[in-house]
Length: 266
Length: 336
Image (cartoon, rainbow over all chains, first blue to last red):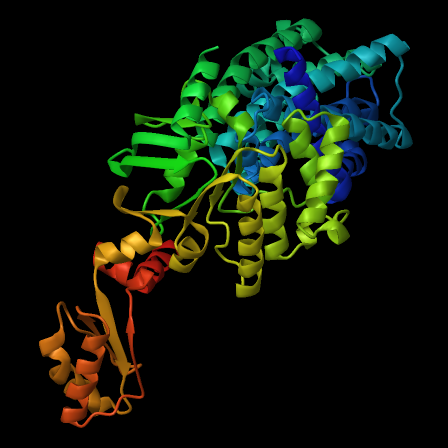
């Protein structure tokens, strides 16, 4: 077998193992789903009445924002899973086997895409129930979903690095909780940017999560007609988000890989 | 090519593991300070020492998990630094903590390991079934490992190390934390395995385990080899024989010590709680007769008296200056 073939085969063995874990401990998936569903209900029905969306329907505006936040949280499973495997000595076992060592990270990040697909499907159904609709073509919508998953995949590699650095799942979860909330809240995901104070607004405009949300809204046809998109990132959300994805992958794949070698060789 | 050549060299020397001057430092701490290890093919070597002696670090270097700061090592004829992947193909490792995936069943665990050894899908499954049978886990094959007892997990972990039928096996404290029955089970399994020709290097802090399983013992402490040889050789190295006796009353201990001191060729040891007196002697059974006569003259009738060779405990005491029990408890205290 070629070394690429070996790497792919080993990666799929590791990915399969991670997916079995989701099946065995469905709580993991449920945990990932509870907070976004709660957010949809809270924002859709509690805060929603107080939030003005220029010329649009708030719940329809909200759902793509929740999608973005959910897949980003979904990506944290990568880091928590790796930290857990480090702690339990599974990584040690993997390291003693003649397998492709890239397979642990590749398998992990790949299986976490699968988790996010499941999560996205369930969130879409929840969205449909509360009145969210896709108002574009099938192809546009597919591009929207792919962008969300690709962005989450890139975030997975950041989380892989963090998980390998932190090494305990509990500490990792605390850290991601307090970092991901601000990153996903200082965006257009929940509230139109027009209401932000000016500095914060600039930050939010250049935040790739905002452009991810904006791109998703465009692809699903959920952009409120009155939305102002003066800032370049928001005017070109697909391009800007893709650029971020590429940069994150280029930076974090090597960093996570290096950290994997180091962390395992202590 | 190169590995083939080395492998032939390894075959010629007949050593499954050969390490020279292994050193590993962590900052200012030198965990392993120049360890040499030779394990002839088909034999069992025990690395014996208290926790923190450098046993695990040595094993991790030999199994390619750590790159040594100094020194060289070949395992199954392959250099561990130059060709780690080839080494991994030829070894099995079972670590100190049973590294089984508790969310997978026993079967899934072994099947996964087989796939990662590239046995192929069908062979991996067959092998998993064989091992479950061999390790008496067939009944629990389709239960998640989370539900396994400590002994079962260890067996599953050990089975994982054997999936590819490696010629060289490394076990890091295979029975630590097991109850006596599981420990006996494990010993039996290991004995059967080695009789099949596998080379085994194990670490242990139990003297009894080293004595029972190993052909050769390497005693390490503070990252250095402080003694090596067979259990018999180590005992001879420590020297002589001992008259050991137990007296009936506390006040007789001092009398017995006084009476026997002239016989002693080394320090007389006293265990007050057990009222046991141990006297290193030379001259074999006549020394025992002499000792009993002296006790009789002193008016002490021992409950029990005998001549014995040094135990591994004596070996430890002599080599490290501390009894084995103390070393173990001390370290456990430090770990907690």
